[in-house]
Amino acid sequence: MDYGKLGFKCGIEIHQQLIGRKLFCHCPALNLKDEADIKIIRKLRASAGETGEIDIAAKHEMKKDKYLIYEANSKDTCLVELDEEPPHDVDLHSLDTALMVSKLLNCKIIDKIQFMRKTVVDGSNTTGFQRTALVAVDGYLKTSKGKVGITNVCLEEEAAQKLEETDEYVKYKLDRLGISLIEIGTDTSIKDPEHAKEVASTLGMILRSTERVKRGIGTIRQDVNVSIKGHPRVEIKGFQDIRAIQKTIENEVNRQLDEIKKKPESHVRKAEADFSTSFLRPMSGADRMYVETDVKIIDVKDRLKLIKIPELITEKSVKLEEKYKISDVLANEIIKAKIDFEGYVSKFKNIPPDSIGNILINVPKDIKTRLNEDSSKLKDKDFYEILGYLNEGKISKEAVTELLIKKIKNEKIDLSKYKIVDDSKIEDEVKKIIKEKPGLNIGAYMGVIMSKFRGKVDGKKIMEILKKNI
Image 1 (cartoon, rainbow, N blue to C red):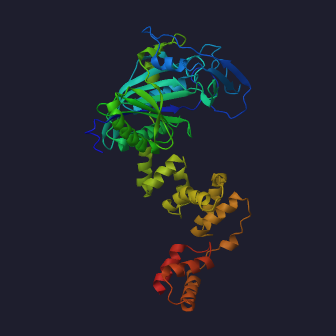
Image 2 (cartoon, rainbow, N blue to C red):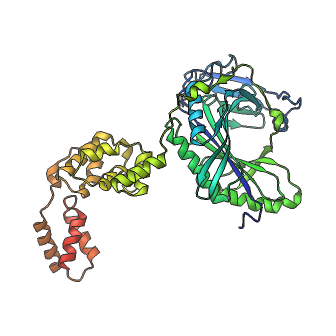
């Protein structure tokens, strides 16, 4: 498609959970799976915003007339989440993270931060509103297709997790409610669906670079706003995986092309697993926002002096790649895994850095996917032990996988079974097999010899000898 000709406009909102405690209480941000020991039942209604009108999206939810069931565990939920106690002072660690991200995105930071209430009556917040504060504006992000503007960085509280919905009620779990959340919004300078995926990926990398964000399914969400000429803005909510963004946007553009003649209205849709979207509710307006009076205004000028800007993951990866002459993919994986690669390389000087990286990153993947063993059981001490044998010449690289599996199974290692064979003995065996099995291709000879010297010979060495003798 010619997205420029279509009048394509697209912006992204990223919502990222932070580690530490919740935003307005001292409960830990754990998302515990423990059984609920608290249960309450309520109904919510919407009140008018500062304009004197009830928000259209709030009216839509109220018409459903459902009651709400809230379940919680007292280990990570308190009276603040139950809306039986006023919010405590804002968690300054979360605020500092929002300021740090704002600086990384080249934003203008607001001097005095004031929290607002955003009406939410679908039950996902016990108060009937979400507390959110504007932290910074007017930033930008560099991409392969030019700069993308950052319109806002906000700090807000996470919503409750929906467990079940029927015609009569909606059930929520409150362990997630109140977790600190950074929201980042872009302008509409995203060029096409592929560019949207790149922007989401880059924003995720910047957030992870702070080492202050939660990881895993459900800890980061992307919402995408899409429109084409003649069709009003549609917000698509609920992306859990950025790999779905490109295809879903492509399908949404096609849907909007089919809908243009029907005089569509701006609304919110849900991202489905098959890359389609489904109607959720009308688009919210200005009527849903009003001032939060229970949280004091925060002057951040002094706090800004304390903020240290972290090095981006991409910058760390490039340095590692250049210093140790390893691939960019391997360098990126090492950084993401938070491995002390420099420590490994300095200790095992007889092993090339790329081999160390392969053993730390790719071998465990192979053990898990191809050999169906639980490589997550491997600890640093296991890698240090096996790399030590390799570094001292007691084993070949081909023995590493087998020995790591023995560590997973807690089996005793007998190094005598993996003693490296002399080159002369390998060459004798190669000549013998060529004589016994004439006419095979080099790959077939390789397989025969490798099976005979399993774990005792470097495959590269066998190939060199084979080429010399065939």
